[in-house]
Length: 602
Image 1 (spheres, helix red, strand yellow):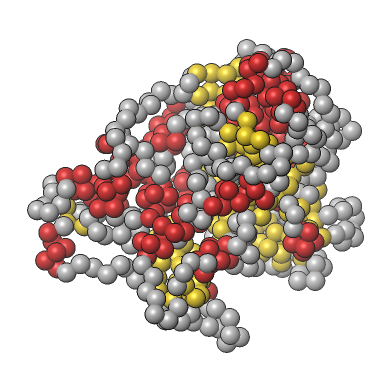
Image 2 (cartoon, rainbow, N blue to C red):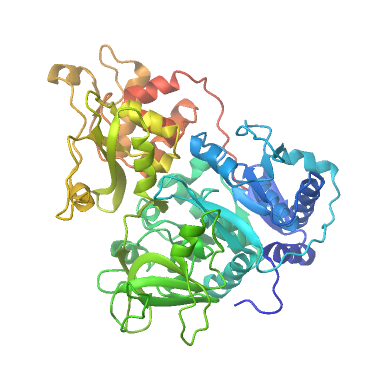
């Protein structure tokens, strides 16, 4: 827990740089970056931002890929007294543009290698991090307090707008402190940087490595594809890795030589994963929400009543289980989980009503907690004091560790021409694999085309919010109270796309990559790769990948195969538009092959 000797996270990193300057801080395919180099580089970024007029508490959008430059910029922003706001440099959707505009950023740090979002009027300037080289490498010496804002992470919003969660330096520093207590981290360790930059788990990876003198290991994205590529990385020299359970489910259980801590977070961990992995590694279940500085409870993974407990609170965190009136429930009774302590966020950016609704208190009691966050998670306390997660109290779902508010997707759908109503649910396609399915009611005289609908959504939403399947229905089923019956829709088996005629289907079904008449060789090869990934004997070039049992993890695996075969990177967003062998082959035709970077982090 924080005390009067509070040091912000960036000061903890600077202390490591003073004590062990030659230690590798960030390991990338481009070579190692030492703590001394990271400290000097972040000081230069801070000086650059201050020279461009950044004032304390102002927000800085960062559009950089995973790597040393991203970490350097985040630390530099904090040293300059600014607030770090990451966006996905590869996400060209309208949502990214909206985030840049609505967060009120004073500056935008964006690499000259990519095109930044359109700048707007005012003081917003697009700054290339390379411009920092001309600035001094000494720390500007600005002081930040525990109450100052540190970063803003945007999560899915039920109203159709993403929510910017503002987290303070107290929560960020407490996260680093709690990690030392729980995750057995120290000098010489190597932490895998796995999470997407817009996911708060990426910040937890920063603190896990850099506050404790360890190395943050950044690999090319294709080497982190769940399955054999990721297993190859874990076999090398990684000591600490945290992944979502659905990623772990794709790996074949084995003993990785140096891996001391394997954490699962972001969604409920199935009991079968614990049975498969706990005997091979120290498996830890981590629970948390963006609104409380990434994670709040932990437990050595075990199975109780067929579920995996989320455990007890970490240092600096308080928990309470309450009824709908926010009164404590009897021990063992189910209730909503409230989180309190230094990690509780300041609130939602420019959303005072929503902040007042979700952040409450004080509620009285001996714990002395002033503010609580209402998680919306249903839990109950076990006899040993640990918590068991039972589900959600609202419609929010988790898709492979990414928080999804169906309302945001539904709002984007109904904004499209010809769609009168939309309901989005998470469907369990196979075991623990979940995918988003949209049921849409068209306006009279309109017949939405699934491919066109997904393409339009991909221009408005990031990939993880684009439904795998869009189903047109005449009407949405209702409950007895007249509300949309989401449970009934989630229980449905989504219908497959209309099949081609039998003779046409046989002409376009590809075995072993051999192209039948009328099918390009590239489409035949892609179809064979799809069949391999889905463990099917064959697949037609017009068959929907997701209808055949695919999901975003297997899609990432497929695109990794495509990259190795054709030397072309295809993003998940592009594949979601037309997830067929024919569509993917057509997309490949628009690119020239290029060499594949295969170097590993030093």
